[in-house]
Length: 115
Image 1 (spheres, rainbow, N blue to C red):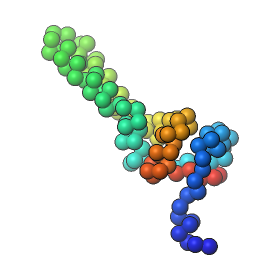
Image 2 (cartoon, helix red, strand yellow; image 1 turned 30 degrees about the horizontal axis):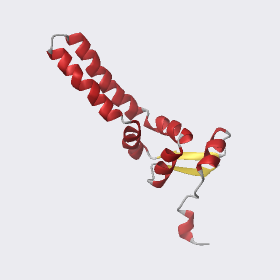
Image 3 (cartoon, helix red, strand yellow; image 1 turned 180 degrees about the vertical axis):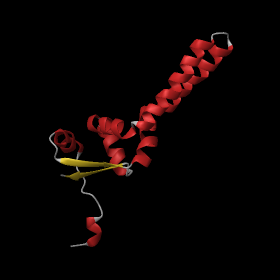
Image 4 (cartoon, helix red, strand yellow; image 1 turned 120 degrees about the vertical axis):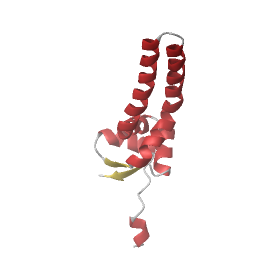
């Protein structure tokens, strides 16, 4: 047997993964360093946070500091939640969206192995 074949994971199709994950047939290994930027990109959280922080600053400068502070805080908290919960969000996304599953496994963000 080729020793290089042991280092690569077997490809598992999305349909088999989505049905077998709930039954415990697979072990999912998520790379946390890659999961955070991948999830931020998939969920488009950075543009959303900017869309909250920018107007929040404008509203605060226009004379409504509490509303502006709430918008700024909401944008910052949103980014931090995605950053801290990236592996869980990734697992949720890949179990429901074939395109995200394909991208995550192809780019090394996660690896799926048979249990």
